[in-house]
Length: 340
Image 1 (spheres, rainbow, N blue to C red):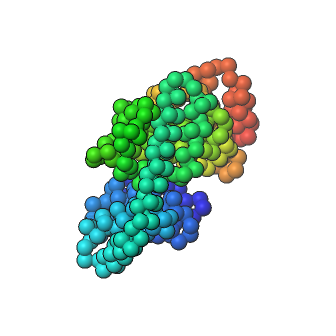
Image 2 (image 1 turned 90 degrees about the vertical axis):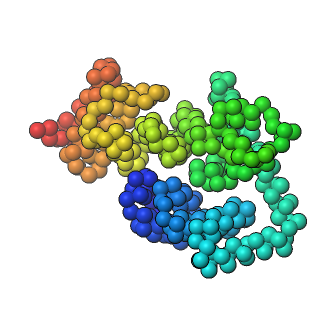
Image 3 (image 1 turned 120 degrees about the horizontal axis):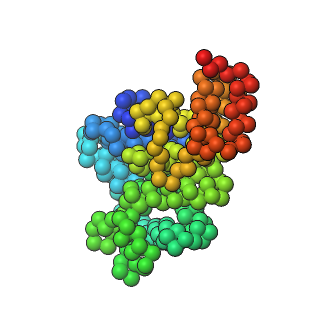
């Protein structure tokens, strides 16, 4: 499962049972963060109560092993609501509640500690985003980057940065900054949850910071998380292509190119004339050319060579004086790519 790629919502929706099996396999083989994200994806697209109960149950058991007792309690409660006749879910739910009740003082102290940690995470995310608005990326970068060490992906962040108690005394200008920009939702009295849009901005901005600092692998992963949170616009995929090319990860880059084509409803060979905000078309097509050229050299697949040539031609049409691309184009033609 090391090379397992997180499926899109459409892929999960098209074959739920297969992806439930994937989730179980990920758990068994140690891919726990990816399993969490897959179970959450299943919950976002599936309406059948039994399958939703199963996804909630597996999330609960994962979080219980991570000692995230109250997250586990939340997911077990949802599983039981969805499938009250399931004896295993009911037993696990009652056992966890009994454990909490029998260790009430310890659990209360633990909850207070975790709540403080959650507030710190929100503060660092909010401060980092505020510093970016003040054009201070060097100060924002370590603050934002520190949170990915704690929350390995967007699903985990979404699950754990929820139901946070923030009193008026706890609030500061950074927290208010996040709330004013719809990055934080007030779900009940003094209780707050980070929003999808807040996490999307976090991962999108961190991807740019990683890219600027030439940490391309981390940038590509942040792009993946941003697109998972909001797949309405493909900007993170375009940025991911550039990052994968710079990492010389042509397989991942090729997959991103194909996902862009699927998103736009085009063939991989289509030359799009419109680009998302913040995407340099020359940089993008240069990256696409490098990826497809690497695939051609490895596989000798002529179709890959043609895609590489097409990307070179688009990049040169936008900017004629581009020596690296001209050199790549010449090498592809001399390598015997059949153009007719």
